[in-house]
Length: 149
Image (cartoon, rainbow, N blue to C red; front, top):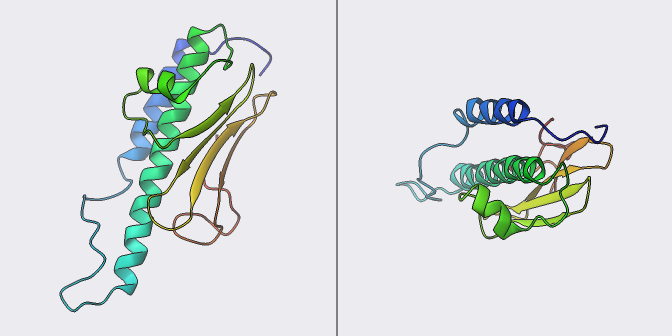
C-alpha cells in the first residue's frame, strides 16, 4: 500500500468475502473423537481439522478487525491490542496473539487441538501472508501457507 487509509468500501468487500468463505467452513459443534465402535483415527483427524478451521476463521476475523482499527486510526495499526480488536469484533478469542506497528501487524491464532497456529501478517508494503505452524498436519498445507490475500 502507498500509505493511504483503507476505505470503508474495502472493509465491506473484505467482510463480504469472509462471510461467503466462512459459509462452507467447519461443521457442527460435534468434536467427538471416537465413534460407536471406539475407532479414533479418522475422528481425531476431523477434530483437529475442525479446531484448525475455527482457528483460521478466528484469525481472519481478527485481521478484519485490525483493518477496521486502522481505518479508524488514520491508516495506522500502532496501538492495536487484542482488547481493542475485541471491541471491534467481539468474537475475536482471548487466545489471539498479536503485534502491531504503524504499517504492519502479525496476528496468530493457536488451534485448540494439535500444535498448529495460524498467522496472518501484513508487512509495511501492504503484502499479506498466511502461514501455519505445522505444515502437512490438520488444515495446514504442506507449503505452510494456508490462505491468500
